[in-house]
Image (cartoon, rainbow, N blue to C red; front, side, top):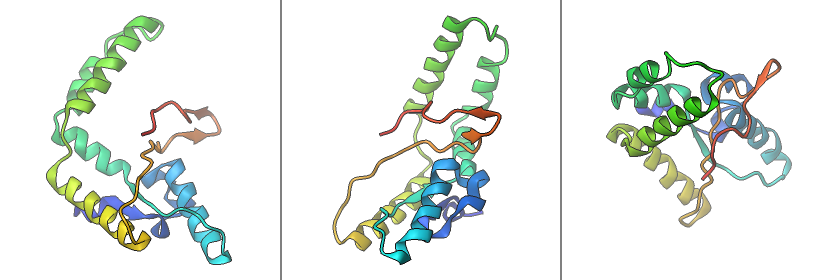
Length: 145
C-alpha cells in the first residue's frame, strides 16, 4: 500500500468511507459530492485515513508505548488518566511524520492550492472512525488547528 492510499480528496469519499476516514471527513466528502454540482459552494479539502495514523504510531514506536502506558491504571482515577493523556499528547507532538506520508500530504496540499489558484490556509481536524456512533460520541473531544 502506498501513502497515496492513505489520503483522499473530498471528491473521492462519502459516508460509506466512515470507517476509513472518520465521521467528519466522510460527512465533508458527502457534502462536497452531493452539493457541489448543485452550485452550493462547499470548501474542498482532503482526508488522511485511520490507517495512516496507525502507521504513524507504529513507525514512531508510539503504539506499544501507549498500550503499556494506558494498560495498568484505575479508569476512575481522573487525575492519573489526565496525566497519562497529556503525556501521550506530548509524545505525538514530538514525533515526526514519516517522510513518505509528509510528501503525500504535500502533494494533496499543492493540488488543492492549484485548484484554488493560490496558497490556502487549512483547518486541521480530527475525524475519529468511532466519533458519532449511536452508543458513544466523542465529537469535539480532540483539538482543531
